[in-house]
Image (tube, rainbow, N blue to C red):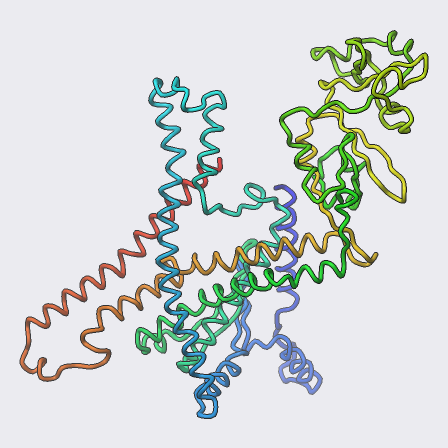
Length: 549
């Protein structure tokens, strides 16, 4: 986290520095010269303050421009012209479907929020019940051998469908750039939906731009409030739902591209599958002891005597197995030296020793030997019994309590062995492997991994924006969409912008009372739904954070 803070400090210092030196300055001359006018015209071509505004306050950067208003007005005129009537009809039908999908998304997002909130209460309620009822703690049905914390974590994992992406907590910190880029691209797709749909009703845009707050980017398009309010409720709801609908369509497009295997074709052109040889190291923790001995791009062919030459995930199966595997072949060592070696390292309570505890294959004799020259030697030293060794040799293997792992690495046509001392699960947690190697030297190993990571986050981000923006929360599309739906519901009987003059002249008090009651319900629902959703969202967030901790 300290490195992230340093990067943010450097980033925002650079942004403030660029803004200070790049912002337009007043002329030093009372009258502009011809050279000054030329420089001003050249500078305004890139940094035109008449159309673009940059607002920078502390850790918030906002860039908004009206330079694209002309293109949007041209689009509005094009779809309203008679020669393009078929295009307008197709776009209108498309965004009408988007309005229906917006209603479905609102109901679905509210249902997911309720489901998540209810299920997030399960592990906390279970923990509170166990702490308050000692009699229940003695019940064997609660699996107390694993402890209360394990039971709560398992219940949370089963019941949580929506998992928050918190870099450094729920996902690795180095995934942050891919997450931010995926979110920003999904927001651009989102805002394009609002802009194109608004062109169908000739609603102009005021500004379009992007903002950057701390580390979170955002895109936006603003419309005149009077122009939106002047529209009929259905047209207004269509514009509001167009943004989330674009995210849904984009998500379906990403699924289709993945299903037809377009990415797999490019992968095959740039990379080759080495699963029939072993596993490629594609990432390793910075604080891992293996980092200096197992560089990225290494090809691991064996774990101990278990080959990795299989399409199955033998790497994970071997390193995460709870049952010990059958002992493999041993090594031939000098019998006299082995019998005279100390046995202090075989005592689990003894201080640290550079020697490793070995046990004889044919007897319970143990001894402490230097493991490096033995376990990294040639294959001719291997044995299954003492008979396989020369006369003065003893067949031995490392004691299981020593936790010795041999990683066979293939490089430059030769195999070398790296020794690891410690739990096997740590190797699985610290080293990330794959099955692809670049076909060409100019193709980096990380390109495929980064592209797949970004692709997965892009699908997740665009679907999340579809559901999240349709929640009836303040400042989101969902609150405005619900307000437009309420306008359609409570104005359906009277007609929009139509008045019964005869009823008004007759002072129909009964009809006025009905309208007043409908107006009250409309106002109550318009205020109550966002407030209730906000409370539910805050509660769900707090419960999710509590379950993570």
